[in-house]
Length: 125
Image 1 (tube, rainbow, N blue to C red):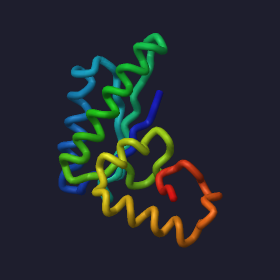
Image 2 (image 1 turned 90 degrees about the vertical axis):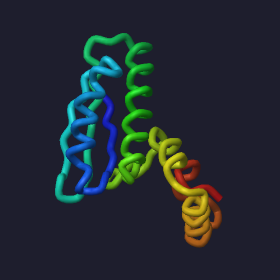
Image 3 (image 1 turned 90 degrees about the horizontal axis):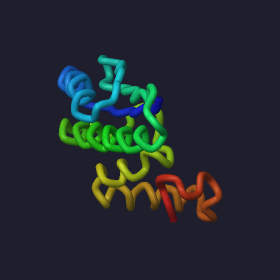
């Protein structure tokens, strides 16, 4: 199992949940979702079941790309609650304007000029 965390505007939660439900057929993998309708945070669990590791990786990656693309289309974001790790970093970089990335890097440089806190994570200097 792998979790895909996303946030969408509250008035788009139903649309995203419906999309996740329908996406199972498109990517041929089980997806179970839940979330916090009051703030738009959603969690989709992509389930491996009996898939081989190779097939699981392929389908899971495809599902993640489609889910994050849809969240962006709905004016949402990659994460609203769990933060960004190595797995979500490429999706965040695609979803934010370059100016936002530069701002995050600038803040990181002010507070961590030697880049010793979480090196190689989202903010880089």
